[in-house]
Length: 190
Image (cartoon, rainbow, N blue to C red; front, side, top):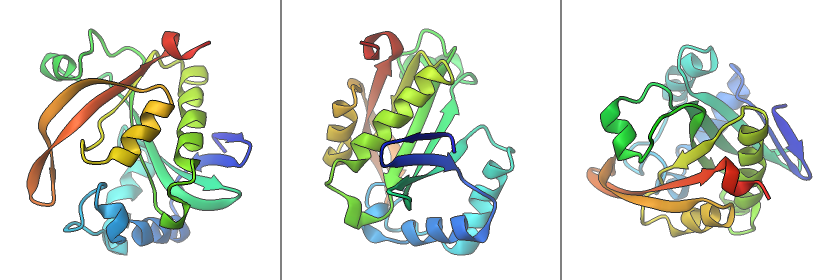
């Protein structure tokens, strides 16, 4: 387990069929795909294995995790160190430097757990893990501007809108605007 607190636990995704089937279940659900990957872009089990196995085996800088609520796997969270950004990307993401800056992405795949505050709990636990264990100085996330539920969750956890990223991500055949949101270590420590 990477981290456990109260009813939340977060672990590394494993190279096993159980985790791949969970991801395939979640990434073929239209409600999940509406803001993560796109409803026109479902992931079959074979595509899940092809996409996530290299990540899990360490052939990619992304670290993939599954999170549980009350010992039930309900979602996915990933993080990545932003040390390889070029000057143009650093400017786009409003970063003077990328030392100890991490990007994250997440979704609750079990939609019956939506709108209960669980995403806020998971994100708070994970942000604390990145700040305390990995010594992150800043964490960024870039939700679709239309994903108001996720944006509210991020704001509750201390993320602030930094910049609009126009036509940032291809989603369902159209480039969508995203918010760059960030939380700084020094501002989050009370």
